[in-house]
Structures are given as structure tokens and as C-alpha cells.
Amino acid sequence: MTDTAAEFLSLIGLKELEWCLFAERLAVVAVGAPPGDKAEGQWWMAAQWAPYQREGEPVQSCILVQTRFRGKQDGVPASSTLKAYVTWQLETLEQEEQERLELRPHPTEKTTHIVSHEHGMTVWKTLQEGEAEPQCQSFSYSRAKLQGLLLEGASLLLLRVLARRQTMPPDLVFPAINTEGDLCTSSYSALGIQRQAVGSAETDVFVIQRAVHTSTGASTVWHSSFLPNGHLAQLMQIGSPMLMLLQDESILSKSGKFEPQLPFPKEHLDWEEDIQLYSHFLDRKDELQLSHAAYLQQHPEVRALLSDFLQALLFQQPHDPISFAAEFFAHQRPIGSPFASPRAASPLPKSSPGHPPANGK
Image (cartoon, rainbow, N blue to C red; front, side):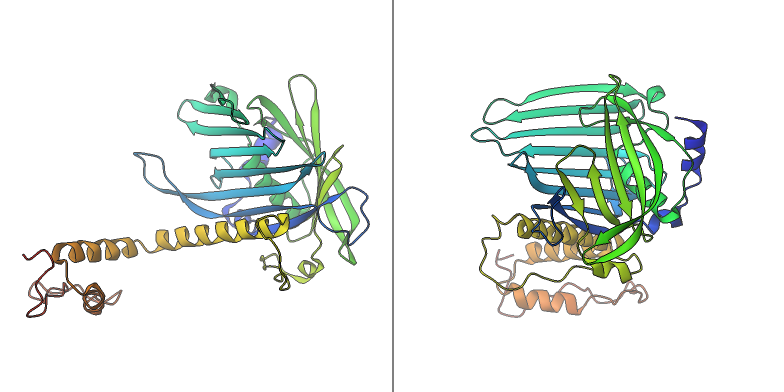
């Protein structure tokens, strides 16, 4: 990693990253398709704060980056996912990428799982072809080889930072690990401001080129076009017949905070077979899971309250658990009230006369 790139990363602040925490969705269309042509798939990305914990270690707050792609590759249904836990210094704690190709009769699935540890990073690769036994491989890299490493999830965050700044040093280069688990380099360069269509409107976008260079000399190049608020307007891999395109022009008047798109009109559809609807379902499922996990992290008293209730319920085993629950929660202290005195009445409901616990004790 060059000194310029190292200095650039050190100057990214926490507040700046927080502006980059939102979700967005692009349609997958064929290159050269006429405007308004039906999407052939969807690409989705979300970044937000989330808890992360390893066995035997305390919980830490980091950024969870997720992407999902559903579309076709050479006419064959394909999908891919990315899930990465990244610190606000853009260091990757853990990342997993999955790619699936629905080849018949033997679908293929490839998984690359990367975990950081005190000695460096360990990579696990798995290839599953149809019903055959999965092919597994693992190897590690020492920390000395990973100085300044920028993995895929962290790279997506960096691109949002660059897009909001709309300026960057020339030739940013970082060590990286590609989807095969091999060490490589990733470079970033600005292609300037360009005009681009978004739906029926046209707007200025800031275009960034990102290239991944392998040790064999081969390169994979992406062009990412960003709106000033950091949202993607277009994502294209050079040489691919497909590109990801923003079709919702209403985002142009928004300040950068993600707003859900309008729901689909009511019509009879097999949603599990419809790529867009199924992707919407998975997006909403992930959003709810992230929201629920964040709420429980912010309110640890919820777990304690439920644990106390279940303990009391199982200890007394009342014949009428609903009435027992109503009485139990009616006696709970409001959050923020003073601690009860030692002589205060027990908050546990007692069995009514003539209604002993179900266990007879």
C-alpha cells in the first residue's frame, strides 16, 4: 500500500462513515437495453451498525455490510451474496462471499469465508457441485502480508466515502483478497463528473474506476457512478453483458437517507419464482433481522425481563399462564424508577387460592 493510500484511510472520520450507512437497490439490465426495459434481476446493498462477537470475546460495535445479487449469467439463473463485519477504520473482522449458478442438473455454489485473528487472516474456500461431496480448502496469511488490507465489504464503504467527497488522490492502491482467496491489489481512480440518465431524468454523477489486479497480470475493472449523496446510479463490470442501474428517479430529490420504493401493485404472481419480488422479500427479511438485533442490543433489559418471566412461569407452573403473565408484568418497575426497597413486595405473582401450581408444589 502506498503512503498516500495509508494517509487517506487514516483521515476518514467516524462521522463521515455514518453518512454512508444506508441501503440501496439497483435493477439488473442488459447493456444497451432501451430505457424502461424490464429488469432481469436486482442488486441490493445495505450498511449499518451491528453487534459483532466472537466466542469468548466481548461484543463490539462495527459496520455490517451486505450485498445481494439475483439475475442471469449467460442465460443461467445466478445469485451472489456478501456479508462483512468491518470496523470504522475499515478493517475487516469477518467476511463471507457466496456465488451460486443454477446449472441443471448440477447447480454450483462457491463460498469464500475470511476471518481475521491476532496472527493474520484465515481463508476457507468451499465448492459444491450438485450432489457431489464439497471440495474444501483452507489457508492463512500472516499479518505482515496484510498491512493496509481492504476487503470487498470495506471497499464498498470506501467507494461511498469517495463519492460523497467527489475528490480523491490519484492512484489509490491497497492490498486485497479476491473471490478465490488469493492476495492481489485493488486500485481506485476518478474518471470525473459525467451526465447519466436516471429513469426519465438526467443528472451529474461522479464516476470511480476500481480495478482488481492478480499476480498473473489479469485485471477485473468496475465503473461505479455515484450521486452526490453517495447513492449508486450505475455499477458496471467492464466486459460484462449486464449492468446495475438506478431506475427510481425520485431518489434525485432525496438527501441521502434511504427511502423504500413504492410497493408493487396488487396482482396474482408466484413471488418465489419472480426474481424481483423474491429479492424484495429477502431484503425486507434482512432489514427486520438487523432492526430487531439492533433494538435488543440497545435494550439489554428486554432479555433479562423475558428470562425472569420464564423462570417464574416454570417455577410456579400456573394453570392459567395468561393471567399469570398479566399479573407478572403489571408488577414490573417502569424503566428509570428507583430500585425497590428490601421490604418491597415480590414482583412474582402468587398462585390464587384454590389454584396451586400445576406441579402441585
